Length: 175
Image (tube, rainbow, N blue to C red; front, top):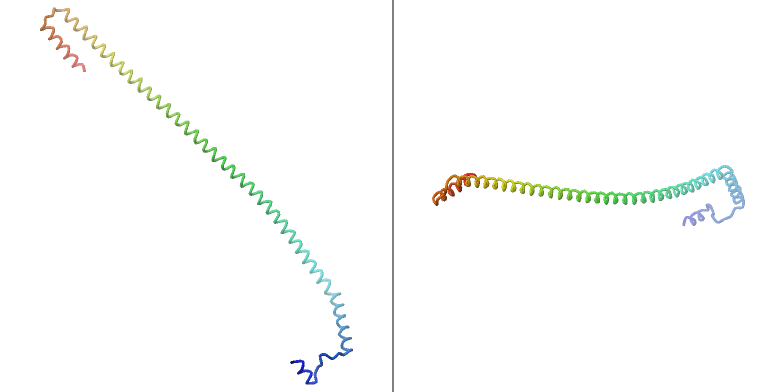
């Protein structure tokens, strides 16, 4: 619609070809291309090449960093596995040591208990032997006393009964 308006008013005919205008358009175009090529094209191309080179360098550096990171990750994973294994060994050794210590303590306690029991049995046996020896000495002493009394006098039935009662009372008084 704008084209019809311009054509109807007697203004610019867009589709009309003017040979002078075409020649000057080509000349100006080539001058602009020459100036751009001479002054702007090389700096633009160099800037684009530098940018492309920087991008390639960044990609290479990123690849190198990624490879280094993967290597370090593998290293750390190996170290972690080693530390896990070492931790499990330490725990197993601690359990083994604790078991040995428990067994040693139990053996010591059993031995001390057995020694205490044997000592108590010896003491009881010694006390029993001592008591039996005391009883034996007392019986012997009483027997000697009774025998001496019997020998000193002749016994009749009343004396005999009296002597038995005296002996029993002496035995009771000793306890």
